[in-house]
Length: 229
Image 1 (cartoon, rainbow, N blue to C red):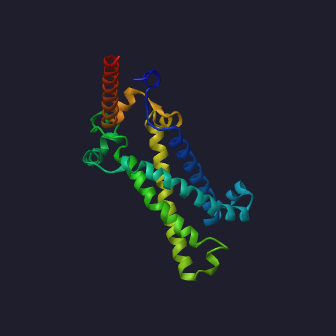
Image 2 (cartoon, one colour; image 1 turned 135 degrees about the horizontal axis):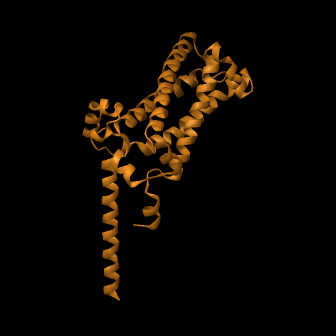
Image 3 (cartoon, rainbow, N blue to C red; image 1 turned 60 degrees about the vertical axis):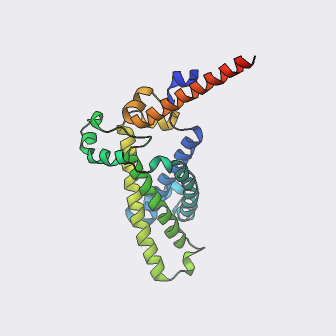
């Protein structure tokens, strides 16, 4: 076990993972602001954030494509950690314990709990829908050649998918603030042993098991080298 790991806790997210996450998050916020400005008159004033109505219309789809590409990378990296397991079903059944701050009663979970996995799958479902329908609505490159019925369907589906994604993001942010230490994990990368053991017991056990195995392997290799000398 290295000194840095002992002193600073357990690495939960690598630097690249954190950078990718925050770029996707900031891009989504910009998409939300520009999208609302274009979608509903009450939010039209938000176009000032992007230099006016025309720049907002131009920049919105480009941000969408950029975010989607980075999200794909993130989704592939997080896929294995977000597959549902048997303990996730039990975790969901005990959701009242979570809401009642009785999380010590919850079953131990892996790197992500069932709530985090739901957020992952909702975004995995909505982001491609937003990308495809957004491309259909992209003026002047695509939309000007589309039939009216296709544009109507695209704008309707785009709006509903955006609504689901925005609500999911709000819940995700609230949950991260609620669970102390979650935001630190995504800003600094590391969490304490106590935090990992309490919130993600199965993941913590895997980390400790791997460290023990690595230590035993290192000790065995050292003995072999000494015997050869």
